[in-house]
Image 1 (spheres, rainbow, N blue to C red):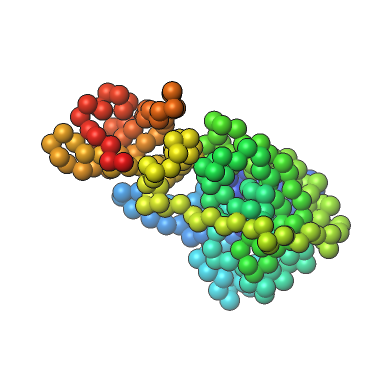
Image 2: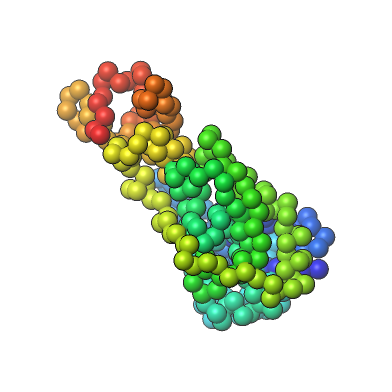
Length: 287
């Protein structure tokens, strides 16, 4: 049985964490995630999905913002065979942290590494029109998404996928193969394939600011951009009202008809989600 120190913070991390708990070949020694943070307009202190789940299940839990000497000792005290990292984010692992574990730290990344390194692999693959990808298991080294490959699982990207659907599909696929891949790796941890770094590509994490629609793009790419940024941060653009006021407008959906991009569900700032056709007489797009 492989004992695992699990690093994760997102809803998608839970897909793998739940698999660890149900798999007889794997055991959980510690969950490491981020500290609770203020969320929403009211700024209520809220745990991330992994922290909330760990508390509900009474799992051993360590919440951190950095790898302090104290947190390193607690991780070392877990006596884990392996670290497993799934959508954890910073702080990043230095070699000292990696070497705590006899089997090092394994990361699950939803792209065909070395392509689409970075924190937002799903939306960028959708935006760029990729139709095939891989879920990559790799051994972490001190550089982001840089370490040698353990295994890859092929995954198709269809034309209707949002980032949420892609991540759900990718991490479910990883969970289904988790036991076999980690067991094989534990039996021969030196059987690794270095990444071809000459083929690398890196895409930055999305923010609310970078979700602005670029109307100079081809309409097919704009349509994929709108689709890819669901459920967050949501694509947006500026509109001008008939009285000359400039406002932000979120765009939740669109379609292409006769080589023309038609907006569908939209939301003017301060108003409810509605159909663009119902309000288009009152606003003009600033393209």
